[in-house]
Length: 109
Image (cartoon, rainbow, N blue to C red; front, side, top):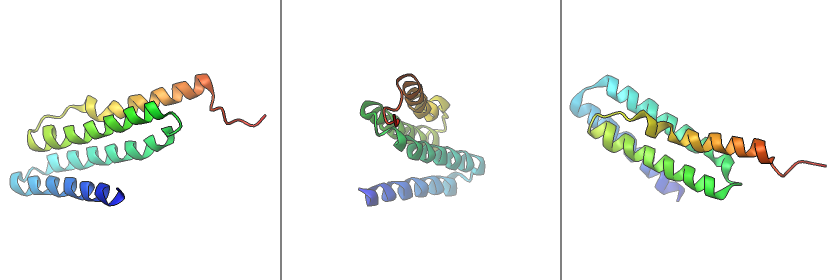
């Protein structure tokens, strides 16, 4: 599974650079690389939500959607929908609100 994820990341990066070679739009390349880095960072940050499984699954679905929107809508069509890229932040924020209200349930007495 880890190798499939590495192949998907490398395929995404190669598609971005292939599109840059074709269009020679350096600004678009930088924006897509920065957005992809942000999506990867949000995916890594989302691992702290494994204790709340439904929220974690929703977060992973939003990560996959953001990744797909980056490839299809921005790299190939040139439309930048920023709210899709920031949607995983909603699940992280909801997790912190739930942990603040309900507690972590792992406190020592």
